[in-house]
Image 1 (cartoon, rainbow, N blue to C red):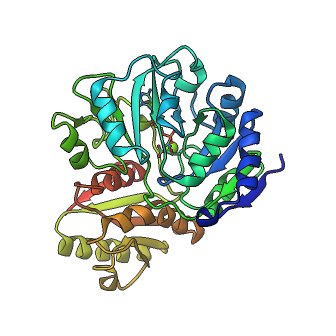
Image 2: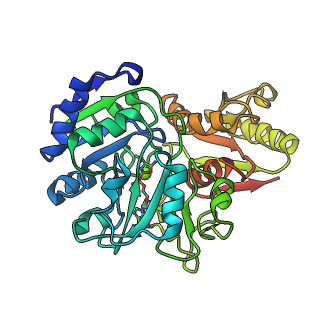
Image 3: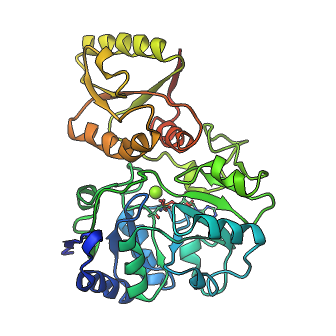
Length: 350
Ligand code: TXA
Ligand code: MG
């Protein structure tokens, strides 16, 4: 398949290009596009044949439901059968933005979109390119992250091209995504509402709306038989760079010592080691390929750079990656959730 790639500037949006991409969606094709979280791979959510192509292009397991993206709050009416009070409050506060709400789905949603679940995740993105694409396509857009299944989500257009060139009809490029980790998913079909995936909207911010909101306990732990995450996608190994990744967690000084010791051992085995460091620590590593995610005082920059940095270690063909851990609060919860999963929960405590 010949993939058309066109880049737009959100400050000076070329509506001709956005409309061209919207037409591809309306006609049953696939379009990758930027959102404020990560790039998405979109198709008409109400057309089962179009949605099927998303699963094929990504190599995505069929039991993993898609999020449906809308451009206007009114669009939700035909997609769900009930909007509880808590969902209304959350939408009012956090939409448009990096939050997905799970609600009981209506008949118009095909089974393939919701992976046959009785519920559907809905999100209204704040990125203007995404919103205009949805608006001009005149249909709700089902869109998972625009990566090949299992890989870190793309946060810039080059990474979309890397994963999807030749597999999709159109790649609509914009800037690098601001949030860098996916939306917070909150299940409003249960009471109290429950966070199924931490993301761009923090638990602390959600609790300001309703203090009883909590995170699914299975989300921050290694999945096992007794503790299954409620979001089907959270059970898979995910966000994984090609090289194995290990996390060193604990006191920062001891973390640096431990990482330096591990690096020496790996170098002794002739391995190329990548170190996922921070501005505060990067100068303490004497060997290995050190990349800083940014300052620990600016967790937003850490989340923004996370997936891109994991992918850049792939470009450098490292044999192993060692990462520092972060505090699990604020956006740090989402960062550690993604990092833990990238590492397959290979965590060394110091
Ligand atoms: O920020 C985002 O949400 C991005 C951008 C493109 O909008 N999208 C995204 O989609 O991250 P995806 O498909 O990569 O992740 C969707 C997650 C999966 O873990 C899936 O299992 C879960 O949402 N999910 C979707 N519908 C669900 C439902 N009805 N109940 C429980 N989990 C659901
Ligand atoms: Mg994904």
